[in-house]
Image 1 (cartoon, rainbow, N blue to C red):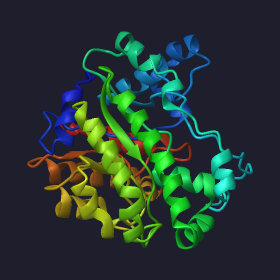
Image 2: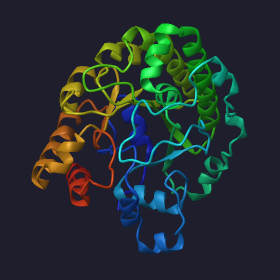
Image 3: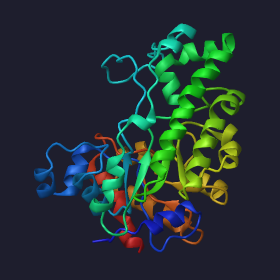
Image 4: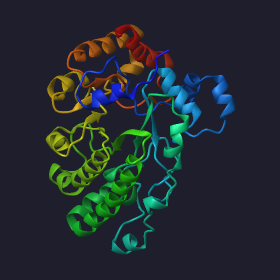
Length: 340
């Protein structure tokens, strides 16, 4: 079995060639975690939670061949109205803040009041060579949409930009503090700034509004994590071409989330890997619907494409939800052993 060595992922994020083929995934799913962790580990930890540092998550990531474990740093989050319990949630569901009075009345949480002890305790749980990769409780744009609603936000940017700016700032300054706290722990090797920005054809806000309201706060997050000596992975879905130069300019070390319908990861790697590391990328629909031999072939070819330059870690374009067949997931990840 592979021994974890976070230095491999660190080399990828520094746009270098890792010592061996390296995997990256944002998150898997409960049944897959339990299958990978092993029956004994699951039996001893029946009440485990996916967002906490625990033996089930650690063993699952280790046994699958990853050099790290993804986790949230604490329970810090932005309280919001309970959405309707449906298979999908409308972008217009947010109705917590809708004017200046509701903004003032909102009970803004303090990141300092959350418990981060699991990041300290992780040093006693993680195997030698393994680190945490910590994500946020959603991002700047995701949280304002959840609090305000997408259509209401778009109207607010036109009708009341001062209020919109104040809400962005209230969210942004708290996320910056959350990342400052998390990145200071020795157990943390890197951080994910996770914030979906786009649709399949364009960014959710105009590029100018992205540059005015969203990107400056992400730059503060990146600078904060870099000041702690850690790299930052941007996880953002959608077509981001119009702000890709900005993403590079604010210092993001790697980009995650790719869809073939927007641009295949192979094409993005050829264009951009000199400027930003590429992690994941094998299209999720492709993983779900393709024969196993095609999944293996494409995964091996992606490793071949990046074997000289590096700056790449193999994984899906987004994550591994429970509707991904386990065999299809393993068809992708198991090729790292053939490529070694």
